[in-house]
Image (cartoon, rainbow, N blue to C red; front, side, top):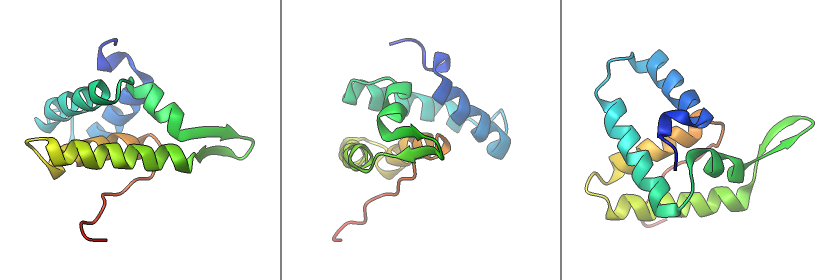
Length: 110
């Protein structure tokens, strides 16, 4: 896989992140590492993940529900097994949300 900064979807995420939190937020490096771990776990690069979750129509991008559900489940599993727990899952969710894929965390017991 190429360096994360080479992927268009990561550029979108980082630009949005910088507008909100500023360029010097130390969480950026941590979140990039988390995204890299998630990509390695699912065997896909960031652009492939977003492309699987979205389809282009005449009206614009639309979410592919099956792919989104699959990634929500993968994020939940990743989060459950990661030392940073929910923080790790939220980093991946943030990446997806900033690329047009609406996701939320699962609520235990629901």
